[in-house]
Image 1 (tube, helix red, strand yellow):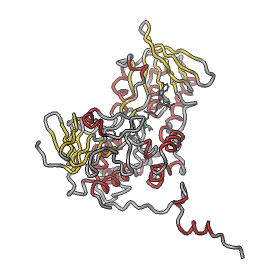
Image 2 (cartoon, helix red, strand yellow):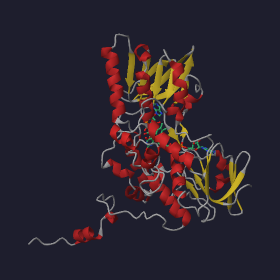
Image 3 (cartoon, helix red, strand yellow):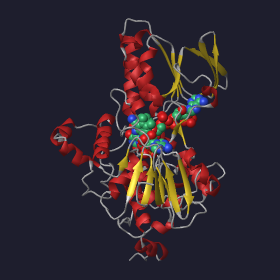
Image 4 (cartoon, helix red, strand yellow):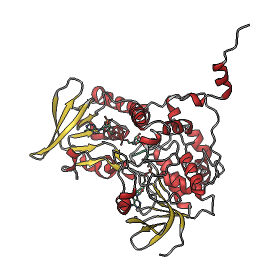
Length: 441
Ligand SMILES: Cc1cc2nc3c(=O)[nH]c(=O)nc-3n(C[C@H](O)[C@H](O)[C@H](O)COP(=O)(O)OP(=O)(O)OC[C@H]3O[C@@H](n4cnc5c(N)ncnc54)[C@H](O)[C@@H]3O)c2cc1C
Ligand SMILES: NC(=O)c1ccc[n+]([C@@H]2O[C@H](COP(=O)([O-])OP(=O)(O)OC[C@H]3O[C@@H](n4cnc5c(N)ncnc54)[C@H](OP(=O)(O)O)[C@@H]3O)[C@@H](O)[C@H]2O)c1
C-alpha cells in the first residue's frame, strides 16, 4: 500500500466522476482519488465524428448548477482558451461535441485527484475498508464510487459476427474508413445510429454506396426536449420519481424513452436533406433505404456476406436484408463490473440484476452503513431517465458530496415548483386554498 486511507476511491473517469472530482477539489479535507484505465481523459472517442453536437445545454456543465464559483465551469474553460467572445458570437444552437469534450479534457488535465492509466482489477472489503487493487499498486478507502459508464450492447445475434465488418458504434471512428464502397446496414434508431447515417451520407462515395438504416422504433423519432418534458431533468422530478414504488417507476421510465434517447431534430433534418440531395440532385445511382419498425432477429454470414433476418412490426412479416458490413447502433447496457466480484454476494441487486440505489446514489449492500458504495449512471430504473444524461451531473455530485461528508455542504433544498407531480409538492398556501374554497362575494 503506497497511499494513506482515502475518504473516497472513485473508479472510472468519464464526465460523471469528473464532475464529482471537480466538486471535491473545492473540499481539500475530503481525500479522494479517481482511477481510470485510459492513458488520458477521452470522451467517447469512437463516436467523435465530424460535425456531431452536444444534446445538452453547455450551462449543464460539470459544476455550474451547484458550484458556479468553481474554476471548472465551461465559462472558465472558454476564458482560459481566450475564446469567450468568439464562442458567443458563433451563436450555436447546439455546441460541437468536440468543444465540450475539450472542456472536459481541460478540467481533467488540471485536477490533481485523478489517476489515468490505472485500471482497477479488484475491490475487496476487509477490516472496515475497501481495498482497491490496481496493476502495480493498491489503495484503501472508507467509501467507494463507481463511475465506469455503460457497456456497448452487442445483441446475441451480433456476437458471432462481431469484428472488422460488424462493429458497435463505440468503435465507429476507427472502422468506418475501411467500409468505403460497400453495402452497409446500420441497426439502431437512436442518436448514435443517426450520427452514423449522417456521417455515411456526407461522404463523397455515398452516391454510389448501398446504405440501409434499420430502427426497431416505429419511425426515426425525435428527441423530445420541450419545456415540460425537460422537467424530467430536474432535481425536483428525480426526488419524486425515486419515491415511487418500483413497479410504477418501470412503467414511467419506459414511456419517457424519447425524452432521453430520441434523435436530435437537427440530425434528422440533416439526414433527410442529404437523402433528398442524393435522390434528386445527384447524377449517380443511389441505393438508400430507411427501414423503420424492424427488429433484427438473427444474423448469418453466408458466402462472405451478412444476411439479416428481421421482423417487420408494421405489417407483421419476416424480411431479409444483405450487407457487406453492419454497424451495431444498438445502444449500451448496465453490467456490474468484474472488479466487484469479491463483493458480489454482498450487493442487494433487484430481480433484473440492477443495484438498489438509495436517494443519495448509494447502493444497498450488507456492509456497515459508514462504508458506502455510490454508483453513477446505474440508476435509470431508480432515479429516472436523467440518470444516464449529462443534465443533472452537477446536482448528483453535490448530493454525493453531502452524503460523503454527512452534512449539508451544498444547500440543495429546492424552490417550490409549479409542477405538481404529487399532492405533497403543493405549497401550504395552495393546499389550504384547495381545502377551504372561499365563498365568492
Ligand atoms: C457518443 C455519445 C454521446 C453522448 N452525448 C451526450 C450528450 O450530448 N448529452 C447527454 O446528456 N448525454 C450524452 N451521452 C450520454 C452520457 O452523458 C455519456 O455516455 C457519458 O459519457 C456517461 O458518463 P460516465 O462518466 O457514466 O461514463 P463514461 O463516459 O463511459 O466513462 C467511464 C470511464 O470509466 C472507465 N473504466 C471502466 N472500467 C474501469 C476500470 N475497471 N478501471 C478504471 N477505469 C475504468 C472507462 O474507460 C471510462 O473512461 C452520450 C453518450 C454517447 C455514447
Ligand atoms: N451527440 C450526442 O449527443 C449523442 C450521440 C450518441 C448518443 N447519445 C446518447 O447516448 C445514449 C445512447 O444512444 P444510442 O443511440 O447509442 O443508444 P439507444 O438510444 O439505446 O438506441 C439503440 C437503438 O438500437 C435499437 N435496437 C436494439 N436492438 C435492436 C434489434 N435487435 N433490432 C433493431 N433495433 C435494435 C433500439 O431499439 P428500441 O428503442 O426499440 O429499444 C434503439 O433504437 C442516448 O441517451 C443518446 O441520446 C448522444
